[in-house]
Amino acid sequence: MPVAIVAGALANKPRSGGEAWVRLSWVLGLRRLGFDVVFVERLAGDHADGQRYFEEVAAEFRLAESSGLIDANGRSRAGMSEVALREAATGAEVIFNISGHLDDGPLLAGPRHRAYVDLDPGFTQAWHSDPAIPFSVGGHDSYVTVGLNVGTVASSIPAGGIEWIPTLPPVVLDQWSPAPAPEVPLRFTTVATWRSPYGKVQVGDRLAGLKHHEFRRFLQLPERVPEATFELALDIHEGDRADRESLLGHGWKLVSPLEAAASPGAFRSYLRGSDAEFSVAQGVYVEGRTGWFSDRTAAYLASGRPALVQDTGLPGQLSSGEGLLAYSRPEEAAAAARRIIADPAAHATAARQMAEEHLDSDRVLGRLLERIGVHG
Image (cartoon, rainbow, N blue to C red; front, side, top):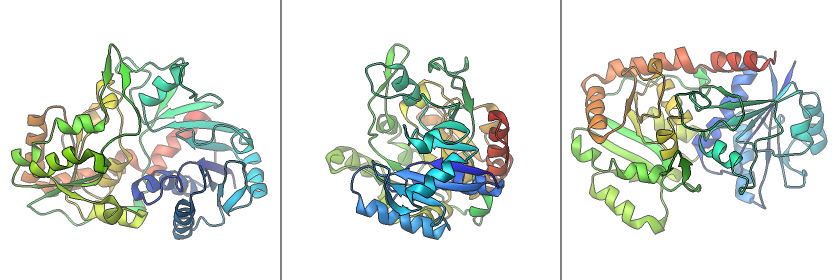
């Protein structure tokens, strides 16, 4: 059986069920295609809670014997030994290095094919192109991005001399059975972090804003659409108290993501228990027309939950106005929310159909493996 390595952050992002699903989707999806998959993570610092989280998720998804958590020096902290990990990497057909989690070492060097997976289009390319920033995506054989327009005339993000291969985020559909059709009044939700750890990025002749800048443009949405509830499972720092009070003052309901979505199971239950998604995007995704597609939105759609998302330049077949609706201005967001409210069952059906047609991991990863010349 061919071996595939998936490298990414799980223990480094403890109690974040959504982030866990990003990595799990690649692991479980590649398994479905016949690969013997090994997940590997390098832990930053001495993070006891992160190690516990890693072990919990690995046990839940039967990865305890096919995953390894190592420290900065390559020593095993959980799961497979460093010797076993090196042997797996040496015999692997491919490594999918999510967000460049591994930047060097034998685990990255061992596989026959090394694929960089970019989840932050615009940020990744800007950092790579800036000699003042100690960041590079080098050392890989192929470069994959969820920014569907990056490297094309549709996006203003410079490709930096790299051929970026576009991909939608994979969803293992049998992990996301569709929930019962929603009923009015609808509850729009999302899981988010208010303030990005990244700084602004230059797009053309201006600095693109971050997610909280974009959110402030749509603060009045609950007042514009009083017939629905708008809820955020929001990680927001105490220092952003003014923003928190503004959200509450405009009618947003806030819950803690640690209570709503701390584990993969809780995250899945929160999405399936919602009626639809409403979310904004990072300013660079929007202004750079990156065509960024959210893994979280993919999970909503797979759950049979329509999604109302900020327009990042998605191709027409992905934002046809049924199941997945895109908006640019506040009045467009309100109008689209009312369209979902008017026929939630039809939009729920269209959401699941979109996931089956475009996001199914068998299709997404199968196409990608063919594109990069890796065979199971």
